[in-house]
Length: 354
Length: 233
Image 1 (cartoon, each protein chain N blue to C red):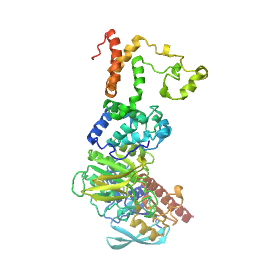
Image 2 (image 1 turned 60 degrees about the horizontal axis):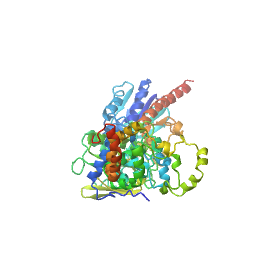
Image 3 (image 1 turned 60 degrees about the vertical axis):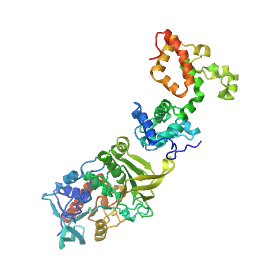
Image 4 (image 1 turned 90 degrees about the vertical axis):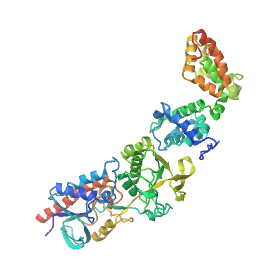
């Protein structure tokens, strides 16, 4: 008996938006999440504020969770890890472990929303020493400090006077194997720079970059205000090495547009780590036989014009599991996946009726 | 000459002093209309005539200001701002910066603070400053005579040879000569002198060239006193 339910895998922004859309259209969604709560990476990593509007992240994600909680059209399965799948379009029999106990979920279509993971700076080929120096942190660590309104040096708890961001850590790098741009880090770093200047006005903030990629309204909503209102200092040139000098960090690089070598002392360095496919994304690709690109992201079929369909009928993918994506991309793609997955079920239904 | 932008080039000047001068630049009312932010696109350099001839970059001026780099601003205030021709072609900046205006302000701060480099840069202009400030006028077409300004170079001789033909071919807006052009109404002169005094120009001149200042005071004193103004205000 074909199922008209749609399985949504992953309870982050894309999964939440897909589940909500399916429910709004009167269809049934089963939302599975391996963690014990919804909210995905923004919740797990404790983001302080969203890019570009600096909206409180917790509040915004809560607003995404509310419509799917206690929704008669959404069945939420927490602590549930998808481990296998049998059957095919219209009749998937998906195996999962819920709190360690095997369960089977029947669904007519599947939407994979398993997102990304932050690049592990231990893998970078420059010498930034993330695991060596306490005061070298990542964008993600910085979110936590900002959220707690406790932007201090991890090494000694003091307020920093000079901090810098280093962009493109783990992105745009053939040595590492990630040639792509992670799309959001320029905006996120600039947003965090603004928050640092708000929370610690005496702290000078530098951003060392290759290209600033602040497309659309991110230009006037984050980049320009960061420069003009918050006096964040953008320097084109990437650091090659960080060494300890007394209780400071010495950052070595080139100030390219001023044509001069650069060796500057910093109290803290924030590595703008990019996106890689999450382990969940890699696992779901294998389980559902989805084609992955060379970076491990799930490939959709139609380039710019088809952002959610995969080569496997009845299986769709949304957001950062298909490649670097911001929240706007994710939420827009989620709407498209709702439309595509329901259309897919309805077409099958029509064929079966005839 | 290549512009040396190395860190702390003027090591004998303290960072506090450099910051004091930069604060003076930033305190100028025009500053916030001259600088927003710089993404280093280079359109100002592309449009800049001085950049064709000198190692001069309006971009670097805007960058240094946007970065609030007091050390670099000090270097530029000494080594770069006098290479600008103040044509304001750089005003086409997509961020609405005006590197030329930043330079105007930086020059004024340099002069007001008696920077040695400012004195040196303005050394050759004493006679022009004297002429403009005492008469309100400077060049009229018939001044292009071989002997008038030897420091203008050999081509003045060529031009002056057929000056009448040049003038018919390229008519200037007026046909002023030194005789008519330098004849300035007394009322205008008095107003000019008052402007020089009241806007602080006389103080600037005093800061960079005390000899010139003395001569100008002599010239102005008499006329201003005749008109009933007391020079000591």
